[in-house]
Length: 126
Image (cartoon, rainbow, N blue to C red; front, side, top):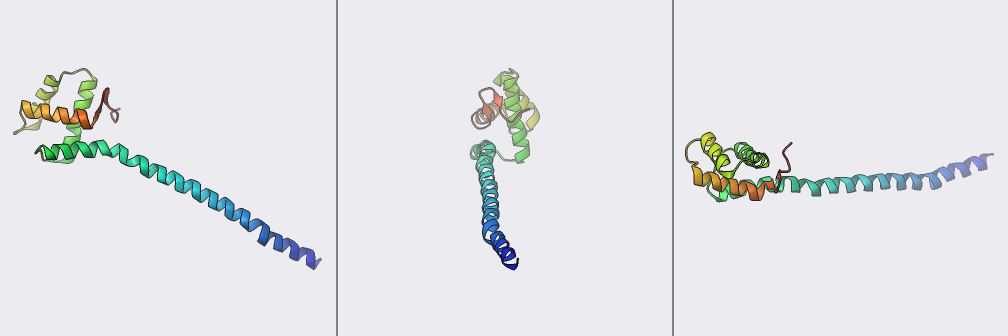
């Protein structure tokens, strides 16, 4: 009786632990793979926004990033709704204050088109 108990005990130690470790290892691999996939996918979402801001800075524009992002996404949305670039430029001039005139507004529209907007408007707009 004692011998059977020791064999079962050994079976649990030798037989069950490797299975348990394999299962835990498998779960860890799945979780790690999912985390890597999320990390690799995340920069794509912000790459266009970052490029947009970099291009604005390179063109000499400054100011709060959130304001420029709202302007860029408004450009995309307005184009999606069918507004002309002239109408969008007029809105930018009217709403941004001093220093932004029609030529600058068209430059901002061009930067937003290249960096933020898909052919059908921004993919981030709801």
